[in-house]
Image (cartoon, rainbow, N blue to C red; front, side, top):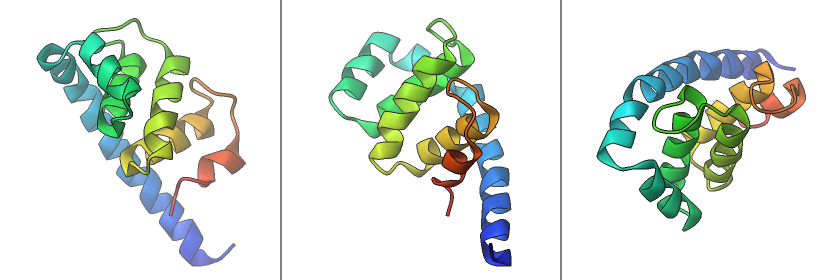
Length: 112
């Protein structure tokens, strides 16, 4: 492993902490502005941002019951569409084992 990949991964983790804090703080407002049913409808249609927002809501329990496995599923759908925030969030979830089986190798894949 080169120093560049270590640096990139550390930077990604630091950036993700900021993204996750922002998402958790503001997900309540997302749910208030657009009900979880509407988010789910848009996420099911393939909207990556709605899937990320719904995943964040499940992670925090804002507007829906707190459910890390549902959060991981929706983050995965958004990550598969290339949404960087969701890729980072899913990576952290795999790193910590939150909502998914802990898998450090899988956790590194979304970074960089």
